[in-house]
Image (cartoon, helix red, strand yellow):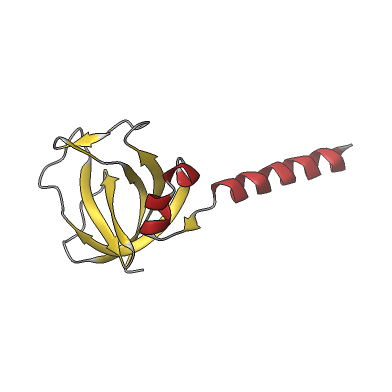
Length: 121
């Protein structure tokens, strides 16, 4: 009986890891089908720009641009330097179902809420 319970616990743990493992994507992947990525953890890499000069409710925002497009990244971390090549890992959100749908009066559409900075990727 202990063997079966142990196997069930191990299987559940593996499923949690697989379900929450970050998915590498491009900006275009996320922007072209935000519903597919909504709430999922993704990794994006690119160049930081458009850094917000002030924090709003403890959050900062910046654009992350790769060869396919540009997306807003919302973070509680210090904003990267403009022009920095970085990787970010976070959850995809949209302006419709988001806690922070508007920054500076502009709708964000789909954006990434950063959970981890992956410098220099």
